Image 1 (cartoon, rainbow, N blue to C red):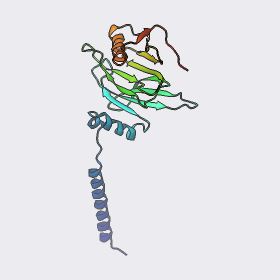
Image 2: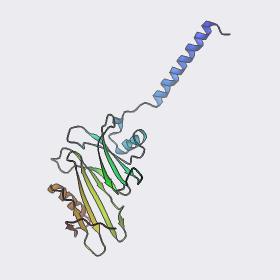
Image 3: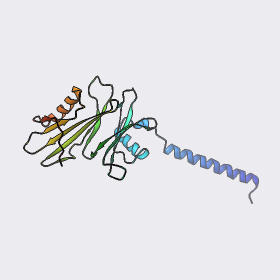
Image 4: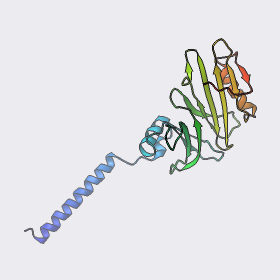
Length: 209
């Protein structure tokens, strides 16, 4: 049997061995704060997929609120189920603890072939809006439609535009009635007239089956 002194020596040896291994492991895999990812949206997305929600598909870091603080905006496409409808769940999170500050839902929209980005309306604006464009997701060889949204979190508004493209007809653009500010209307008009200068503005939205 080991003497008492030998038992103590062996115990101390293994204690220091475990401490050394633990320190070495920590040095190889340091805990990197989320602030180190904020300058690159793609790195931020990878970090959030691993540490927040693996279903996150878009991550943006900007000032989306009227205060001076910046937030993280995440987009997740939900699938039809007993608890969820198909569409985009857009959440505004605090940077330090990833706590949800606000949330909106865009029904029947997809991140596939879409555009998701920040949009500062003009130099006088103190914060960014979230801009979504369905891109070519609802377009086909003979026409289709494009849906666009501007989400104003402080103003509690979602500004909506719908472009309808039909064969042998000018493109038709519907802009939601809450787009009372001229800069919002001009944003959509200038955006869609770039490729379709002949488009006409319609007063009632059209549903294409």
